[in-house]
Image (cartoon, rainbow, N blue to C red; front, side, top):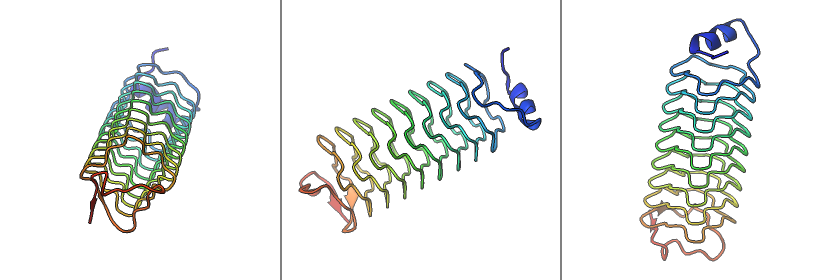
Amino acid sequence: MKWTKEHVELALAHEADLSWVGMDDCDLSAADLTGADLTGIGLPGADLSGADLSGANLGYALLSGANMSGANLIGATMNGALLVRSDMLKARLFMGELVAANMLLANLAWADLTGADFTDADLTGADLTGADLTGAKGQRAKLIRADLTGADFTGANMYSADLTGANLRRANLRCADFTGANIVGAIFKDASFDVSTMWPVGFDPIAAGAVLV
């Protein structure tokens, strides 16, 4: 069966269980999936652009290559989800749960990740240009070679995160905690920080090109 947006919305209206269902390359653009239980659903390559997934459970979902640009994922649960090369440009992930999610090479440019929890997530090579990570939790997250240009980390907890080779040019690092983080080869030129920013032992942010504000 080839799933359509109408099929999915009708199934949810009748409280059908769509967890662990395969819907490869399905067009769900602008679909209303508010609060849906989509645990383990297979949506690789699907079009979820502009969809409303606020409060939805997408834990362990297969979303590699999916287009989720502009999607409303406020309060959504995506723990353990596979989001390799997914497009979440300008997606709203406010207070979202992305614990241990695989977001390798994902596009999260200008996404709202305010208060989101991506502890232990893999964001290696991801694009987070201009993303808002205010108050986010990224303990032990992998951000190896990630592009964090202009990202806002105000009050973010990045304890023991791996930022090897990451680009943090012009990032806002005020009140952020980078204690124990691996920042070998990371670029901090013109990044701003304040006296509350916490750094790995021995790191000199001024020498790395960051600006105290």
